[in-house]
Image (cartoon, rainbow, N blue to C red; front, side):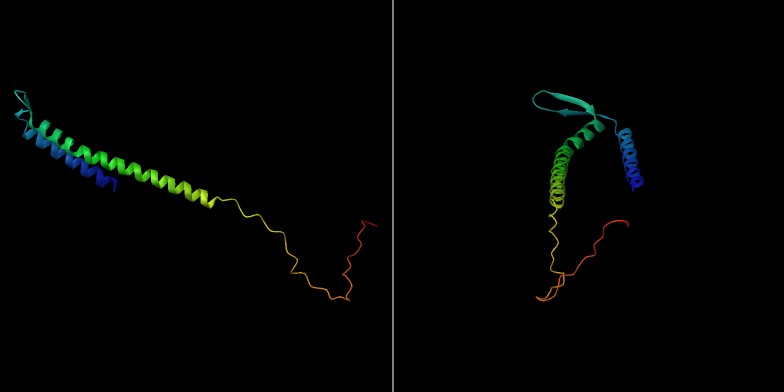
Length: 116
């Protein structure tokens, strides 16, 4: 994909160079009052193109910046929500132990004292 993008810009640059070479003639531009500017046609056209593209470029950069900030804020909120402190473990319940009836003796544990 990068190759296609590079090839596209090379073709545009070559076309612009050929256009400039074929139309490198002086033009007279009347500004206001008695102010007159003489410039070459390619300089005038490229300047007009850049001046017209400037507002859209600024708007695109501002939109990209705003969306990047929103994405960063959302990612931070997601990390904060998933990194919430864990619920403390509850003590083990003894409900699984077998119930003893009233007349039954308690189970005895062997008396272990150490090596004999």
